[in-house]
Length: 345
Image (cartoon, rainbow, N blue to C red; front, side):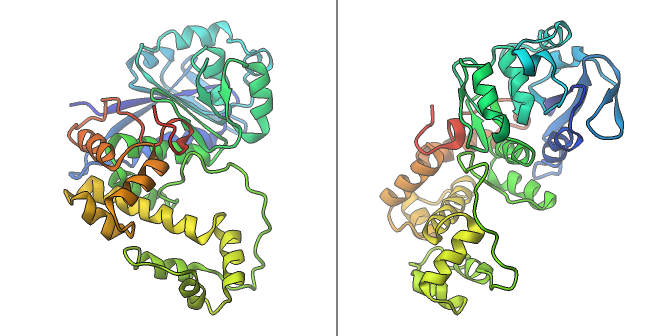
């Protein structure tokens, strides 16, 4: 069967980095036999050179008719959206291009690419985000959109949006995880040398002081606890790994990780639970013990809070994802809109 086709719409003034994100992330996704899971193609409003915001153009072979063949359409950011950005309306050429998109096609935007989806009416009544610096303007221009200015990305099933720049990587990895499970997404992340998972509800921008370079890191403590997630872990034991007081360790940990030690450990335990639910048939009680949650009830509480679904539903979803060779089937998002706890459909 054919791979899931992703078509990226290249618009004048595009950002080369963001244009490359879908090709890099989806293009590295393989099944266990090494077969590509996605086919990634690029189109423009007309075949030929497309100006970027850098000192070079790109030559795009395909015109907008390619959008009619897409299973997923990705619209990266552009700095030259014209009436789309200024008035919230599509140009005639852009409207004609989007008309090629079939009903049921999954739509994805990166950064200000969300303006295109909003101007086309795809985001009316839906959660969405964009770069934090544009969020207020975005909301004023499109009052029917439920803009969340703080999150990395939103997932409303068949329409997904991301914040700026690197958040596009997070969103594309989330889609791979949703389509094919954590093992595939983690391998893509490893090859791309990026974190395997940042939750959609994580803040776009955290103002906090950068730790002084001469100060010790808490990395050794984090590595130490990853080998002991199945055991009770005390804060004093973590601090001892870095020869720090509990107070100093807690402050330094939050400076480096952006969350408290307890929040970070819970997140790592949920990640381990994801892998066990996807890759094994272990009963819930054993998954709970292996991940340090202790009981199936505690496991259910934390997985539901983090992913928006129960452990049983999560396992069932990704078993279904793994049974298909193409990833064409649309699956419910485990994270829900914005990746926020308890916000699943």
